[in-house]
Length: 302
Ligand SMILES: [Fe+2]
Ligand SMILES: [Fe+2]
Image 1 (cartoon, rainbow, N blue to C red):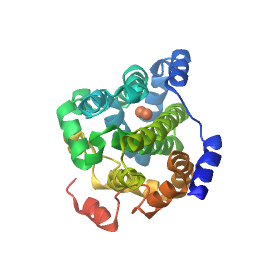
Image 2 (image 1 turned 180 degrees about the vertical axis):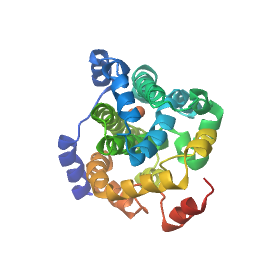
Image 3 (image 1 turned 45 degrees about the vertical axis):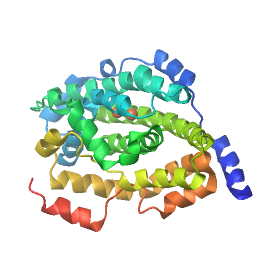
């Protein structure tokens, strides 16, 4: 108990705590994203064959995910306790900062699809009901702010790695720059939600939820986490095949150490050593990818 409190105290000094005001201030100084990148240069790289097949696989995943970001408001409005005054900074961040920044990631994705002459219809990833159903079916604890906050901390961290992944193998300096820039913003988002996780854990325990139950919820969300997700089911069926799913899974597995080093202190800051232990004891930090899942990907029709 004392050790747990001490861990929490020590790592809190190292893990940034971001308030809504911090995020709004950063947002107000931030330049519009899509206008910072030269999509004509990316098109030239694409037409010249410089962008690798591996990179294109990542881009299909990224474009589908980012172009679909306007659906996240559907998630927010469906959370059972999103309107509690205690969760105001979470709700206002989603509505006033996150949606706008993610929408710009989406704009970059759509510009990229055009630059690569891809036949991609953004409407195919804008079905809010389809997305919300997929999300809540995959993660029942995500119906409440606690579950969704945990999910989002991880999802932002994994998105950070996804943007880094195509930047690393892009074969296009401009595309790499775009990937690195967006990745940095994803990590900032992860820190913001991690800060809310600290707050939300305190609120639910004040409500009377035991620490064990709260931490079990965190673990359940981590165990259920999936990436790439099938939440945009129609676009997933069209754009994602076993090769792309396996490529992403292998990359995330390779990054497992880096992901643990990033998320470990975040969970320690939120719940001390006891939460870290609970998370470590969960099947995997990167989600529900067993060998059986790999076999399922490998045998699914493309
Ligand atoms: Fe994003
Ligand atoms: Fe993000």
